Image 1 (cartoon, rainbow over the protein chains, first blue to last red):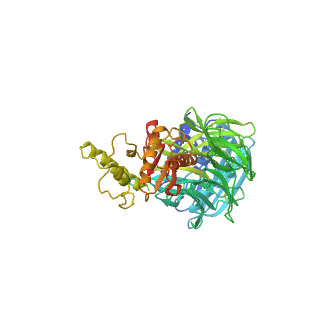
Image 2: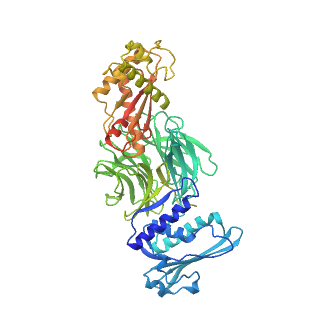
Image 3: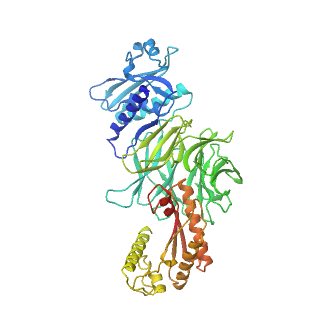
Length: 436
Length: 167
């Protein structure tokens, strides 16, 4: 219990302090504890240099591993020794505090704002090194990313699954300028943990449904900047963009095919909201659904062969699946009176979706094989769930203190945390694919 | 469009206040066409310079129709409102109309965008049934993005499940 509190404190303080540096940074608060994680000791990295270390790499690794819900980072005050080099490691010191894994490392200043970062990961029980890396000549501003890459390696070594810490998220914030009545909408891209946010679009009209291209180079989104919902695709590198859907009626819910060549979306140009697929190279469209009900929120299966979507053709919104070339739609969800906005995990075995449980909108996971639904969250207005590319966590939008905030839940529902902006409403998170 | 909407609202509010002060009623049909028209940038086609004053219960005094949760069914009271505006539009052949569909915040944003669209389309079909030609009607959905009331409870949600009739 004490340990849990310490972890929470460390994470909160570490991130809050850093967040004062930049406007609009998300702060993280763990709302549901970390219990049965792998006990890991992360020793403060030794620093050899003249000035101050620009960033505490060790704390970022700790925060990453804690947020994943798979680890229990042991408090550093309990450490009996503080090795930073292989020769200093005494495994008995770590067995005594019941650490199963040990991370040590060091940072050497090798030039003006240039650092060599090395780390080693040990299996304490078997008293052996599992892996170790050196990152050479890392500029100060890249240290944060290096820390996330180390976290990815540790995560993969110990869980057998790739980490998703060196990834990004896109989200929309609505901020009312002081004295202003109408909010300003910002489309933002940040590290997965909310750091280093960059505004990629500002508008006085709503923005929604950002979607990452599989190569991570583009975002598709819906913008009302021309007083009607239209779909745009923007290249992040140079902010160049084009309108890809400007048909009469509603244009919405863009979703990239896994090969990045097509965009599924919702159009009502032929009368009511239906699912279409646009071929990016030619602009040609094909219609997938034909129904007088609402059909929307398409999402591709990882193999590109099918598309799940929300339809209220049964009277209430439920999740259906259709071939990406069309065909007959098959209803997937039957439990509850509202299931919507499904999207696949990268292994194709699960969907995350919004489900209504006795009037509350919560995040669920639907298992494709068993066709069963697990509810992961406990609040009342949760929406926009998005899987981490490794399927281990789900980011979603929820309400706290009358504002929209982002929250993350481990895919098994065991660990939840909140990512909050100092002000403004945050919504519509979308987790990127792996960086290439 | 929003600014027009709020100007219309301000005008209507002024009208109601004027009514409380016991001012004289202005001819309804002419004023009905003009009520939002000058504010909505339609010029002075109606030819009336006075402000509209609708009697209580006059369906023309209502420019918003409301819906049940997750429904685009138009109830009888809303039908009367739509019928009255349709008659007003038929008397004013220059006016075009925008139907702006909205939803409450519950559920997903894209589903609500589609729901607002269905609501606007349902109202549009009724206008057409009452004789207004489709080329005069424009529908747009804002989903849950433009709430009329900001609370997280049914009294606010009920005000947000709506179609605004703007002309």
